[in-house]
Amino acid sequence: MDKQPLKTTFSRWRYWTRFHLPNLIYLLILIVVAAGSYWWIKKDSETEKPAKEHHPELADAFTSGMQINRTGKNGAVEYVVTAKEVVHFGDKNAELKEVTVAATPIGQPTSTARADTATWSDETHVIDLKGHVVMNRLATPETAPLELTTEAMTIGLYSNIASSDDAFVLTRGQHDSVKGRRFSYDYASRDLMMGGNTGERISAVLQNIKNDPTK
Amino acid sequence: QNQNSDRQKPITVEADGVTYKDITQTSLFTGKVILTQGSMMIQADQMETVTDPEGYQFATASMTNKSGMVKFSQKREGSNEIIKAQANKLIYDGKQNIIVLSDRAQMQRFSPNGKLIDQINGDELVYNQLTEVFESHTLAGVPGRTRVVITPASKTN
Image 1: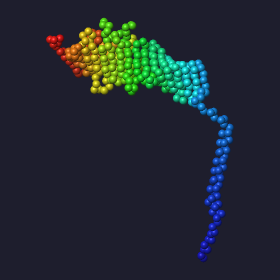
Image 2: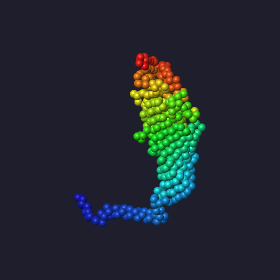
Image 3: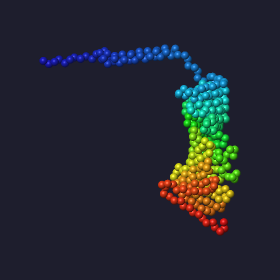
Image 4: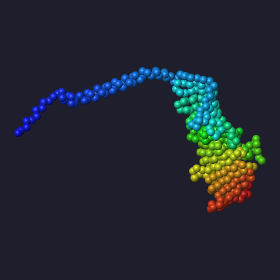
């Protein structure tokens, strides 16, 4: 017996519930999640204190007669920084007047640098000394005292390097001296590199003690 | 001793750069290094100077490029003759006031008007600045000989 063909009628409602309703449900879920998280953040931010107004150009702290002992990783004092006056600015820099920076590397003699002014950056951990910069390394039983003078010098508190691109004069004991431009002094190894690619020559004077008229 | 002699004068060193090792008191000068002390002059690519605990200066001059030679020159006291020397390596000993030239060493003596008087070649030449005497040594195991050329003084001198 022939099968009667199935009579299908197209139901718009069934089509919609089959193909569009799931998307609508997804959309509603997303809207609920978005609204919830917005409410959550809004709630949190309302309880936060208003951020302090940022004015790097304004001094936000000052002191006089400052001494700061800065320790190294092993806890030993690595630098002692003193200043007659200090003004701190909102951009994390402090301006110091009549400054001394004493480096006290373990097992090595103290080297003290003095200058008219300095800028200490919290961010880079560097102290830029300016004006009549004089660095002295104390004498040791084997070596005469060392003195280095220049107009500007940078001390890296993390790198332990004192360096300058300025003209300098180095004296060792009474007679020996070196003049030139640019130097880099490593506090730990006590190696001092001078000159090189500055277009200027290094000039040294060494006294042979045998010929020292004062001896 | 002649007060104006070279040895009374301070040593000056000129160079492009120098690394000073404070712990060992040594300085390594680099870049067209010129050491002078009165009329004495030493020229080299690099020179290491050392100050011993008593304060005497020692210097070792050498070349970084193999083609060049360390050069030494000095006026002899009293006679104005010029001593010129060269070698691959030169050592200045400020305590004994001697100059040691080694490795293809050569010394020449010139009259005040620039005429070559004598010349000596050897493996190692030692010049004593106090006695102004040159000695030539052959180094053990190094094939080489000392050769001396002495120019007879002409009738006019």
